[in-house]
Amino acid sequence: MDIREYIESGILELYVAGVLTEKENNEVSEAIKKHLELKEEVEDIETAIIKLTAAVSPKDAQKLYDKIKQNVLKEEPKVVTLPRKKTNWAAYTGWAAAVILAVGLFYLSQQKNNIEYELEITEAKNAVLENKIAETSRNLQKAEELVTLLRAQDITTINLGGQQVSPESYAKVYWKKDNNVVYIDALGLPEPPPGKVYQVWSLTLDPLTPTSLGLLEDFVSDDNKVFELQNPNESQAFGITLEPAGGSETPTMEQLYTLGVVQS
Amino acid sequence: MEQELLMKRIVEKDPKAFDTLYQNYSQSLLGVIYNIVRSEEIAEEILQDVFIKIWDKAHTYTPAKGRIFTWMLNIARNAAIDKTRSKGFNKSKKNLSSESFVDILKDHDNLNDQVDAIGISKYVTKLKETCKSLIELLYFKGFTQKEASEELNIPIGTVKTRNRNCISNLREMLLR
Picture 1 (cartoon, rainbow over the protein chains, first blue to last red):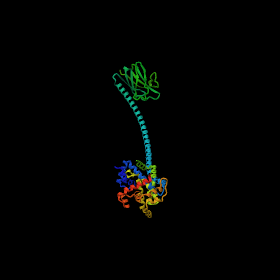
Picture 2 (spheres, chains in turn yellow, brown):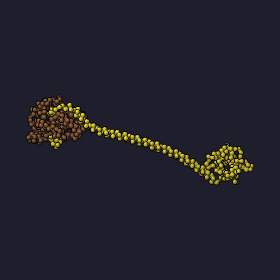
Picture 3 (cartoon, rainbow over the protein chains, first blue to last red):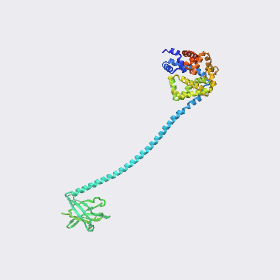
């Protein structure tokens, strides 16, 4: 492109006047972008036209500045209100979210407390059940021991029958001679009155000599009513008497509840 | 390009960019508008409308459309011409439109330090009559080459080159 010729054509003056077609206008805009000389020429033309047209003004435009600026910028609140509303919405949404979150947290905290409380109860129940299991397991062990004992070959069983004081009473003695141990099954005896205790005696018959084997302590609380006592004697019979707490030196024969002879 | 930057800031509603726009172009636009409506009061109203429109429509401006000044000049001319065609416009003013901007300049006082109307008037009166008419039609009225050639009864090809000579003379007088 011949820059000089382009300038001399006068198209730049019409470009500044704004009277070219859209196509011509775009072409000139492109040419100005590429050539600084054209841009400078256009700026000079523009300056001259601005000076000329300004001189035709009836009034100093600076005197209108405040009023016009105020009225132009006053359009802005419309534009500004919208973002401000949006901000408010954002704030409301934020507060709403915060409230929902707080309620949610409170609910969760309550739920947690409830669950912890239920957990405590369950743990307590479990403890009780564990105790019962342990107890049952102990009872089972005792029962098994008892069964094992009764089935043993080398054991002597003696039935003690009810005597005058209490004809309904009965008891059994399982005597393991090898170990010098007797097991007293006292299930057939009534509960002793307060302050009294059953005392077990080993007897030899000729002459009649009683030897104390011991007391059936904790009679009430003992579940299976089987008591283990030591018996190193050559017993010929066993008897159970009701004695004052702590037991007696000699059996109180009036309070003889049960008596049984060892079958030889 | 500084023109694009200025318009970008206008689109972003930067009040300082408004100031720049106003300082650079308001006096010129007021002159163009006044030359068409010939009423100070109406011209002021239109100038305000033009700046409101520029403020609102800044996003529609693209450098491909031309200079910012040219874009605003078109808006101002169209607004003023629309006004002369409106119902409320005093028809008697229209008779004055036979006069050109030169008649306004003849007995004009200086507006401020920047606008030397008396000095410019001296130069402008020295311009050829064809130049005065071409400047009036192309810059103050927005006539196309074809419209101007018909109005002045000169060949269309002559409009461009003759106007070039007129503006060159004007530049010599005003910018030297």
